[in-house]
Image (cartoon, rainbow, N blue to C red):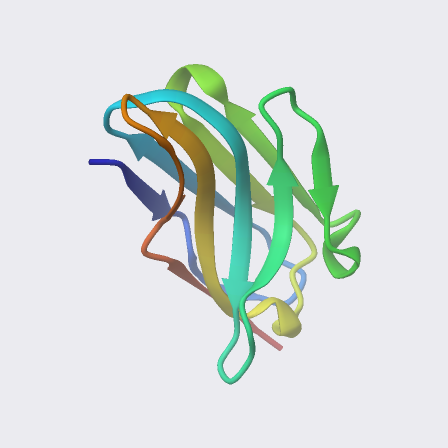
Length: 119
């Protein structure tokens, strides 16, 4: 069974910083892409940032220059450094991984971590 466990969310004032972490565990052979999504109340879940196994990154326009995604392949972990946070960044943030286990390739989600930015 694969698990993704996130940590690092919390309450911060506008302009502040947070660092989210996500570690994958289980019978994992290869982790392909990893990503962070977020979902604000009443809104659809949206992609925030993604990173491939080779380190190529992609960001949604609203976070470019403020957020940085990185990964540690040895630890099966992905991180999201969030700087210059804005109230509109408030959401539940979810870790996502496209990975291959002994049996098959699949897409997995973490349980989510709340990020609240006060004005």
